[in-house]
Amino acid sequence: MPANLDLGLIGNCQVSTLIDERGRYVWSCLPRLDGDPVFCSLLRNDSATDETGFFAVELEGYTESSQQYLRNTAILETILTAADGSAIRIVDFCPRFRQFGRNYRPVMTVRTMEALAGHAVIRVRLRPTADYGASFPERLPGSNHIRFTSPGMSWRFSTDMSLTSVLEERPYVLRSKITFVFGADEPVTESLTSLSSRFLEETRRYWQDWTRELAVPFEWQAPVIRAAVTLKLCSYEDSGAVIAAMTTSLPEAANSGRNWDYRYCWLRDSYFTIQALNRLGATRTMEGYLNYIGNVVVASHGNALQPVYGISGETDLTERILKTLPGYRGMGPVRIGNQAFTQLQHDVYGAVVLASMQAFYDQRLSTPAGIPQFQELEQAGERCFELYDKPDAGIWEYRGRARVHTFSSVMCWAGVDRLARLARHLALNERVDYWQTRADQMRERIMAAAWDATLGTFTEAWNAQPVDASVLLLGELDFVTADDPKFISTVDYLGRQLRRDRYLMRYVAHDDFGAPENAFNICTFWYINALAAIGRKEEARQLFNNMLQRCNKLGLLSEDLDPVTGEQWGNYPQTYSMVGIINAAMRLSCSWEAAL
Image (cartoon, rainbow, N blue to C red):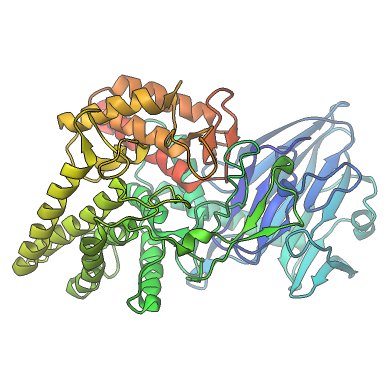
């Protein structure tokens, strides 16, 4: 069966697993979100005689499957049905709940399995790998567990099923409920049945309590909740980092070579993620992320900020190509690391300021930010003013050229503008004048250099004619108002130039890899929001409902879409895309008051 992105996601903000429609673990990094993919068959493209890197429960005579999340949770249920009518239910989750005054989130996945109908015969196939598929760990069976060891790693698989049946992959008649626990090499000191039952109930309660506190819009509640849970899973709670996606090297288009490692924290992307969760009232992720930013800034010792860091704040993300994994559907290369860490992307300074804004206003926070935090942010503001008119690689991380990109300039302006607002909020009148004067000066220069009166649009870069979708954010960033004729004209122009059917390209000009082929999901959402802002709300609703239909059966989106077939491409699930669902729903939904 060819690999596809009809995948469910389970996780606990420490580890995660992607599970295909037949219940196979196809991608799972341990011991954290950027770790070695112990299950890596998503990128292996193995032949039928040499399959590795997965954990499967196969039902004899299998014909079909169905999947769903338990309501408002990150707990996934898969039902497999056979030709003779027999059926089994598989439930997968990563434990996460409150314990001893903190969140319990072990390096662990739990799977339970039970027969639903008929004479169910199964075969368990457990084939982890090590070192990105380069080797296979040694199997050391115990009484009710298997230890998998290789240099630098040791994992444990515990079960109350016949261990011989697992080791030898023999047919097994499923008569009673069975539990599997895979994770850290630690003994399970209680009955697996009671442990799985307790962990399942506690994890269900955690997620349902968490989603109950979300300030969801009246319409599209289910997609918004699923997007919010997914964004939460993309946060690494130990440090507060937010990763761009769970995967590496899923190509943006077939055989395009646009294969990147997204298991890192981009300061810009994380800002948009935090902003979306803040709109739903989920503030704890923001608090953790602000701690992460603070640590990154301190560690920089006043040097330039990178656009992307490791989830512990690592600065060296040197990129390399692996020979051990052929790639998604054989479409390599498979890259580890991301060379964007060496780039200049000046918008990151504005992103740091914007991500911090709510901390100064939200009284729900245990320690709202004040003057000391403002003074720390002023350092980022100085960099915004210094760099807003300097060339950089831009939001799309061009590897072959640098320009004074409009989006980068406007994000720098936004950082300075928000410092003026914060100074006003904190009654620091002298700093209000200081930052407002700079913001006004910056806006005047950007407006003159980025507006092309001949085309009637804001352009990708200063005094250049190519366009890209990022200028659709000028309204969101308050650089222009939604009723500004220049913004309305820009939305119209980009619709003509970048729209493909019901989707938007990020740009159409050739870059380091040629012309882009697939639509960029977040750009379609930006276009939807811009249409709504300028009064074309019905058109925006139609495009939004179409995007919801492009989600897979579990409500998840990757980075890119084929505008002809609607097939998902790119790393998965992509935080940018899930952010788009939340922001568009919040903008387009009727109010609770109007509906009720």
